[in-house]
Amino acid sequence: MSITALPPREPTIHVSYVGAIGRYVARLGLDPAPLYGRYGWTPESIDDGQVRVPLAQFFALLESAAEYSGDRHFGLHVYESLDFADLGLLGFALLSAEDVGAALRTLMRYGAVFQDCDDGQLLTDRDFAYLWYRVDSAVLAPCRHDCDMSTAFPVFFLRKVVDPFWAPIAVQLQHAMPSRDSVAEYERVFRCPVSFGAATNQVTMPSRILSAPIRSSDKRLFDVIERNLLLLQEQVPREGSLAKRVEAAVIQKLSSGPPSLEAIAAVLGYSVRDFQRLLAERGLRFSTLVDIARKELATRLLATTARSLAEITYLLGYSEETAFIRAFRRWMDCTPNDYRRSARRGTNTGMDAGLAR
Image (cartoon, rainbow, N blue to C red; front, side, top):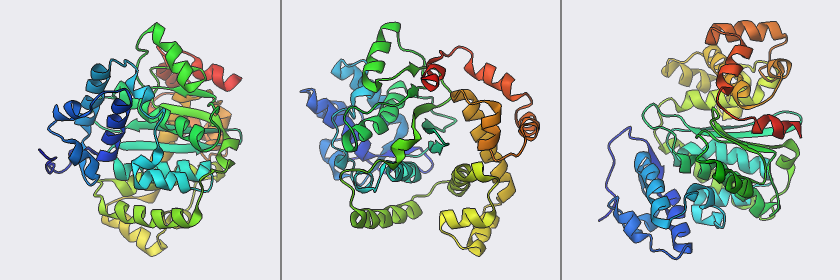
């Protein structure tokens, strides 16, 4: 039985990620075919590489795979020995990127081509880089194994292409701590403090790692692959994708002050006229998108980092802390400190400890 066409608007994920699960199961000495069969898939349909599967079924597959393999930390281990070329076009793009920063920005830029509801960003300041990920869906709850798998992805990738002993400063995960005795396995895999129950999944690393060259870099190959990724990006219908792309571009530029429409048009590869037309066609106001981007960045920095209000004010492009506090009250009807205390309630302090090292 092959994988059938899906109804519109159902969140999906590219089958290459299913293949990664199957390859890990096979490395454990198990046949992935019975696992696929639970969802009406065949190894041939997975290997075809041209289809997408429902994201809800992918989450269910992860849970089933953990049970089938007897690996209670299945999501943590999927990418531990992965050949990233097995991920196809996106994998080859990452492997051929010039440096770590280019690879991670490529992952963030094109991740939504391969997975609906993929919401993530690479944020940087002078000393730290923050790579965060979450599934932005009103109908799908976070899946523990997906959180672990996606957060471990960049860590294993950097160990593959830069340094096998590399470790981040800290890791945060959305899901609750599975059990106290499981923390040791998370710290073994990530080799850093790990906290649970966070607002997003996040890897915090020194910003200097972004300039580390990738051993397999090939600029000519990367340019060819990126052209194909751009074509795929245009072909994949994603409601609200322009708004998300604008917000992500604004976040990258905010520390230099609120970016102009012209600057964001250039980042996204549009002429000013075309950019204005696209915004108008979708009923979007640029100033509103800048405000949304500031709100998103503010809430994430408050919930997931130990940054001071002065630092967050700078990262949001405000000239004065009082202006940030006024804007935050308008967004959330509370102060930044009140929001931070509420967001942190019930989580551990592994992140703060990591940033203080």
